Length: 378
Ligand SMILES: [Zn+2]
Picture 1 (tube, rainbow, N blue to C red):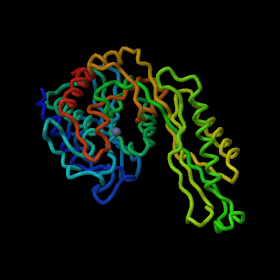
Picture 2: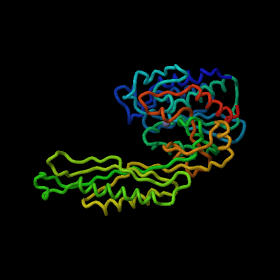
Picture 3: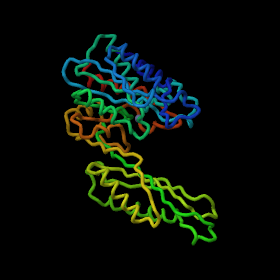
Picture 4: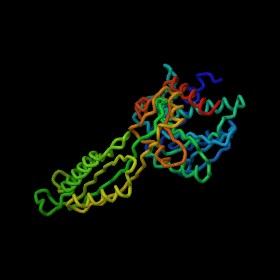
């Protein structure tokens, strides 16, 4: 019922509407933010017969929710983020939406406007052919994912406020259409060690913040070794702790008075954020010979759902892939412990995401369309 090129045409149009996350905006990113694309989605959703709700997440950057009534009381949903990463390091295909070589090119082509393009082509066809999905269908076009997925709980809270009795949710991300049922969470820490500056010829008059911070770095590394020796989660493995950035010093002949360290804890089910935060705070104060302050920059929960369900078996059959876990985190983290099933699934490979050249195979769009057609009962 849909010409194969229709998916690519929709995707091409979406890529041509810049929606760079403002945290990654630069001179080439066009009008930053998702507002322009969100406004078009409101119109398209209405045109295709949806009841539309708009929820401002940041000023001018709303989540757009489209609801299509089905033939049963069941509810199914897709969360598809509409922001993209930055484009400054990209070639001329930034927002070209070029269709060539069986691919669609440009920022967001694979991450993750591909899923949205397929959804719009299907909604358009449903409207043209007067088709009703089996279950009630909710499409959540969400903003601000490429910023550590910190806005993910906003859609989860909206679902609860609306009292929508959801049974199945797909988080759209490039998985080659393989169903993903788990990934680690994370906690990001920033530490500032405070010393005292002096001429490096008289170091006894200063307090060296970099040397003190080195003690903390080694303590965090020991903590990593400790947690990696704990019994692992059967599929997600153990938690890890990694120091990622160290900044300090003002001149080659000055005793440094300040040093910043960034570190990330990758968490598995059972990790308690408050407990870990208290533990790392104590470790920092104990290991560092100078005053140290610690800030939690952000945290997300690990995501895990049993692969042994009827829906996962169906998705495996429709996709041709055995369900698996992912090394990266997604919006799925905000749906842990909810009464509905949640799976990450979308066309194209994560290997093509966030790169100087981004593209998706049109055959992947067609594969997703087949999976959604089964799932929506069209
Ligand atoms: Zn994404």
